[in-house]
Amino acid sequence: MCGIVGYSGKTKCGKPLEVCLQGLKRLEYRGYDSAGVALVAPGMERVAYAKKAGRLSNLVGYVQRHPLPDALCGIGHTRWATNGEPSDVNAHPHVSEDGRIAIIHNGIIENAGKLKFDLQSEGYSFVSDTDTEVAAKLLGKIADDIIKKTGKPDLFTACRRMAKMLEGTFTILAVDVREPGVVVGMRHDSPLVVGVGKDESFLGSDVAAFVQYTREAIELGQDQAVRIEGGDITITDFDGKPVEDKHFTVDWDASAAEKGGWPNFMDKEIHEDPSAVNETLMGRFDLDGRIKLDELHVDEDVLRQIDKIIVVACGTASYAGLVAKYAIEHWVRIPVEVELAHEFRYRDPILTPRTLVVAVSQSGETMDTLMAIRHAREQGSKVLAICNTQGSSIPRESDAVLYTHAGPEVAVASTKAFVAQITAAYLLGLYLAQVKGVMFHDEIQLQLSELRAMPKKIQWVLDNDDDLIHQTADRLVDKNGFHFLGRHVGYPVALEGALKLKEIAYTFSEGYAAGELKHGPIALIQEGTPVVVIVPSARNRNILHSKVISTIEEVKARGAYTIAIAEQGDPDAGRYADVTFTVPQCPTLMSPLVDVVPLQLFAMYMAEAKGNDVDKPRNLAKSVTVE
Ligand code: F6R
Image (cartoon, rainbow, N blue to C red; front, top):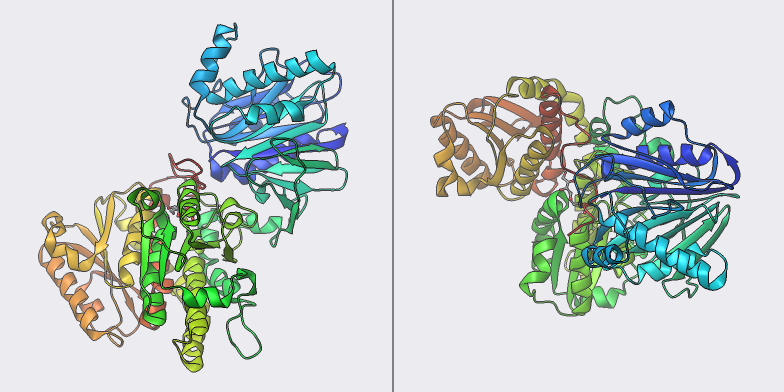
């Protein structure tokens, strides 16, 4: 939450402002209730800055009307409020008492109250309700002390000294007019990556902040600080000891994070579901078709010993984990638990060196998931991350990583990442089956060929169901209280369908296992109640199919308006449901990859029909970097 961008170049010009505003545009998905920039050039008495509550466009309009000076360096911030309501005064940057230093911050400083009290008793005054202003004043004081002692400014040392005094989570960027051209960043439990340019350097919450300028990047590790000045980059720990740089090249370009003609990012990203599956499968097989996950860097002997998997994740990622449970238990014959990451470490889970903890995360920055994997590793378990974001914290802190190659996901509501996560988790399951020798080669090949067929089947849904889904969403736009029901792998899909509708259409909805209906929720069904049912194939497990059809009959008998997601040729769905969204035939374990697509489109059309901002739903942010 909160997006951060920083830039330092060699010549005084408009580029620092341009980089900050472009970066903020790409990071706006991380928070969008206020935005600000600060610029520094030689000769300035005070940092030049502007900040505005509301969307980034407010700030852009403001700086057009009140132009900022050319500069050597700059920092920019888009906010998701934690401390203090969204307002101009609470927006970042915040400045030191004398206005010579400005900082931006992502995270929560937990000892801000105590630090503020101490500063107030020394005569410092505060104008905002934020913890960030406390850090700005504190940094100003430390920087002045250093100047008094040494006779020269040293923002890098001042920042590191301050970092050691802060408790909580933070990524902070700072600039000081006494060192024009220098931007210092530091991180503890919040993300920061460095972009490497020629005679220029960049900082960002993630690579999206600067990928249009450079794809060469460096991961900044936990409790590390960075100083950039033009093309010079220095990284140390908080004690000032140099650390080894971890370079990587971003595997997508800026155009991947553009709308590219789509009305919104969510629409574009749903239409990238097929390529997300495809790309996640690419390059992961040897010449004999055996799965080859070299990037895992976990000894096959260690994997052979694994006797339990615990998936930790939140929201959509946890539903992908729940889908994977059905497949992995079936294929590998070891128990798979799926645990919400924020519940995991508080319940004293049973973890052994033979437990594999799989953290699923699109952003790689979800604090709840990060804390869960730290706990797992402390208990001696191996952690494997399934993640979509290179250079992010969760893969960095895991023993192994399997990247989903869905490309950047910008819309707050997760779509293509979900299908990519299922694909990666299936690859992992089949790889474990291969390593443990619990499936024959041809059995694994059969599953892989079904998986490879899925992108085309997803495309079929996108090509054929769109109009009906759109019309249905328009017709039901005023309905509230949707029920989403499914069984077996259809159950997590139902949970995901309900979550999508809640978060972007603001429509109350509940997903649950269809078998639970008669244990309580059926009392809610009355004339016109919308019920969405994921119908399993009649070909594969007829018993489940007939039970789900009975569920449709039961709710219809009580007046429900029913929507079925059913495969082509389903003998019953069309007869019982009011509307049927058809999907191509596929094996049961593959069906979530097609069944979820109509639900993603349905939520998007409902949100559009209500006039909501599809990509930036209220109160939400894409990366939840607070616990
Ligand atoms: C829902 C959604 C969230 C995320 C959850 C985990 O559309 O996007 O529920 O799935 O916050 O985020 P990641 O995957 O980044 O860890």
